[in-house]
Amino acid sequence: MSATRAEICVVACAEAWRGDGEILAAAMGTCSILGARLARLTFEPGLLTTDGGALLTAEAVPIGAPAGAAEGWLPFREHLWLVQNGRRHVMMGASQIDRYGNTNISAIGDWTRPKSQLLGVRGAPGNTICNPTSYWIPRQSTRVFVPKVDVVSGVGHDRAAGLGPEAARFHDLRRVVTDLAVFDFATPDGSMRLVSVHPGIEVEQVRAATGFDLVVEGEVPETRQPTGEELRLIREVLDPRSLREREVKP
Image 1 (cartoon, rainbow, N blue to C red):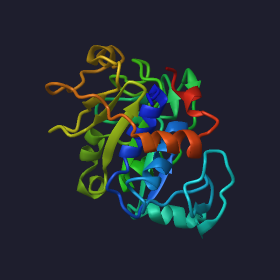
Image 2 (cartoon, rainbow, N blue to C red):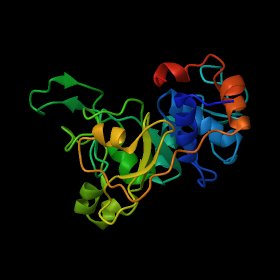
Image 3 (tube, helix red, strand yellow):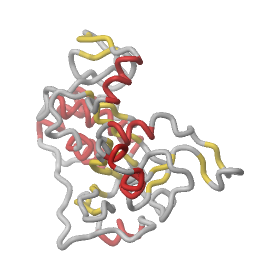
Image 4 (cartoon, one colour):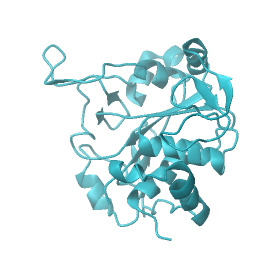
């Protein structure tokens, strides 16, 4: 069985939670949600997953399906406790992201007179300061990967360092997954590094879709392909309606 680009993205998102153990996996976006549930069903069985609301699910349920059996209730108060104590790894979206992982989901343009009003900063500052954070971006382009974000919603490495050790001690940006590639921040100054490119994608395509200097070290490997069992779980169990294919074009 050959995997589609969307299925490769699901697996790349799942890999963000590898090694997390018993921690709440919070995800936003179809491929990210599928990735969290796939990780729980395969290599990370201790993950806690939700129905998208206040129920901790006993099983990793298909996307869009009712929660089924619940193993816990997670009211907002308890959710915030998990965030503040680093017991949650969130994979958020971003309308803009820069080389140090600063992100913007608030507004495009000048702060005093924006061209577009977006979500606001929501929980992004707390997420990025208090618990592990990754990003899922389904359409990478120079409009998203920008030299400088218009408004900082999620805190990047340079700003976390500037805030001092009290603010930076729990700051932990893990990885960025897009429709083209996978990135991390494992560089001396915390800037973004290309980890792998998805099958069929060239490094130059990734560079062309990035609006800042990207760290590229040596030969860049291909992103891991799904196993046969992972493809079965994605197609037959977690997403039988193929909603993933609407988020990532072939």
